[in-house]
Image 1 (cartoon, rainbow, N blue to C red):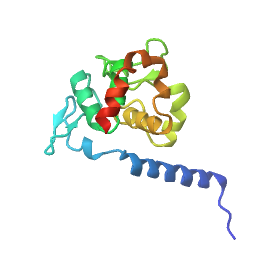
Image 2: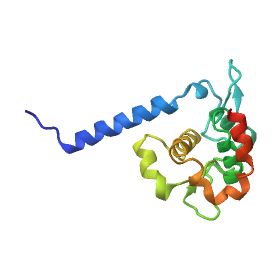
Image 3: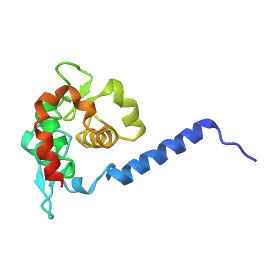
Amino acid sequence: MLIKPRFNFMIELTTSIAFLVTSIYGIGSTTPAMAGVSTTTATTTKDNSASIAAASTTDRDAVKAYLEQQYADTPILVAIAQCESNFRQFNPDGTVVRGKIDSHDIGVMQINETYWLPTSKSLGLDIYTIEGNTAYAKYLYAKSGTDPWKSSEKCWGDSEPLALKAAK
């Protein structure tokens, strides 16, 4: 009987988890929403869904449209993004947006790299891109609700009842 080294088991387990998350949340290197996008602005695809390219986008309207599409089933996350980053993933100079209070908070959803980077990496998500940042936020929301963004609740808290109604 051949016993696999522990390292190979961890690679297989990590790959399985990444595949599962990709299957559940529809995330990967190219999601249907990202197919055929331009490099700097939101566009409308044939099915009228907004899409965005993360590489250099600083257009807040484009980011908002992208988030509204990605979070159609969880609109509270759009309200949270507005409060957390004012719909910005990148600064005008191309650097990723970082938190004003905690510089470890990253991107449009202000995912804290100190707490969440190892897990995001294990899931195959790059929180420094808008796709990875929004996908990881959806993962966090499915796991913990709005708790990860509790510190900004004063800003988005009034939006929650409206968002819940919109989701129904």
